[in-house]
Length: 46
Image 1 (cartoon, rainbow, N blue to C red):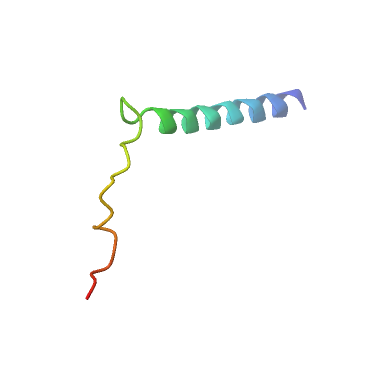
Image 2: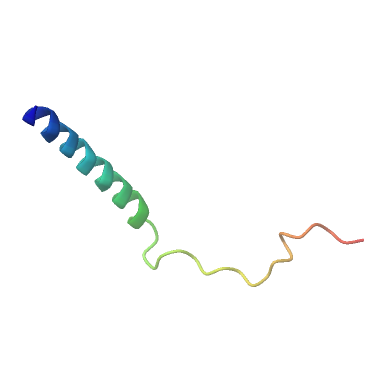
């Protein structure tokens, strides 16, 4: 039973490490700032 709990804890730690690494290993300064120019996202007006 203890071995199963240790394996589950190890798997959980590996999962958290992978999520942490994928979240914070990207850009050096975080996410890019939001663009103020929203005209590209709007459909053309007639």
